[in-house]
Image 1 (cartoon, rainbow, N blue to C red):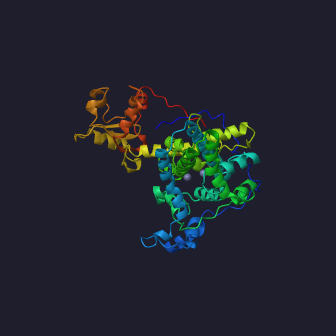
Image 2 (cartoon, rainbow, N blue to C red):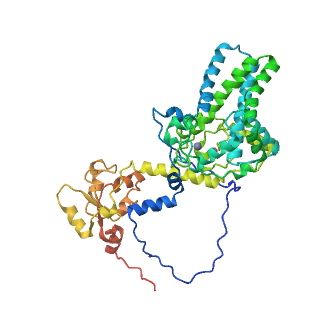
Image 3 (spheres, helix red, strand yellow):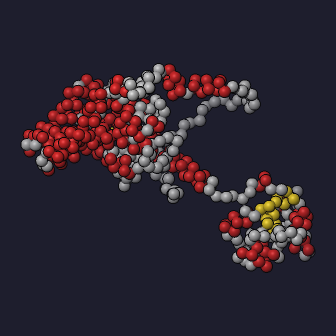
Length: 475
Ligand SMILES: [Zn+2]
Ligand SMILES: [Zn+2]
């Protein structure tokens, strides 16, 4: 891991402000600091936790449906979704092996796939679910129409579930909680009738958006029209490839877009790093970004969900961010939200500190000072004079046992030997040799006692013996 510091003078302050201090009269009353709290029993503590924890309280209030077993599983499956989602790959593969290759259809399928995919990432996700920017009426109509061509339900349904995912990440109220396994977070949550009702999320803004309401009203028609009729007829009328239009620009495209979107809930919660916060499962990874049109910087996204970017750096792959930037340049989008660099750096700093603490735990540190005995200078001298195999040297108030080190001392054995039983503080700190940091660290490992009052300081002792005149204390 590398720790870098960046120039901080160019901080974006669009979402960063320091509030004014409260205008309160200065209280003259002393506040009691020791208001004793009555101790709670374990049962009371649990009750208090549930009372103050929305997720726990809601989960208790929602009746859970019976568990899925071998005898009832078919009643718990959402058959429409299962048939649609599981037939797509088979139709696509059948088409690949039975349909002639027409390059115009391939190009169109890729372009149409990108457009309908971007309608989900830039539209359903960053615009409607997170309000990361404001879009003109025309752009919103384009996004909800193209988004219907990706067949992922209505904006209303999609954004509601996604807001619940952000609000209750990794809990049982998260519709695609990563803690329920990779399969569940990828496609399992769609296959089974949810055994939890979707938790409360605020979607009033979507209820007031006429483009969202329009899409909701005509969703089935829009799905069929944008999902199949448009690609089939463009390929058919354009270059007489109706069959290719259906298989490649229709079924195969939908299969790929569906699973690309599912990867944001599955892969983006498993693969990669957590540079901003590791308390939850979202992760940043280039591979996930590659398959999801840039949604793979998911750790950043969960920390700063209303930021229109997922990738911060220019070289990171985030075509959705580039598309939104282009919308702005075309006059179709405004108010692109960015979290301040200062707040983003705090996340990075916290994670670096955690990594540093983990690294620190792999190192053996000197004995805690509180564990060392305190002895007088005279006691130290007496101990050092004993012929018990110990070689004791006093440096900076600590008594060190250098017996295992004395023969390998880079400055020679004799130099060290001459300081035994004495205070070698000055010699160690530059009197003889200005020791390296490594030498300081190595020395600290040899501490065996603390000398009361720090010990004797050699240079003062020498001055005392040579016409030392004490400096008067001025009063
Ligand atoms: Zn997520
Ligand atoms: Zn999101």
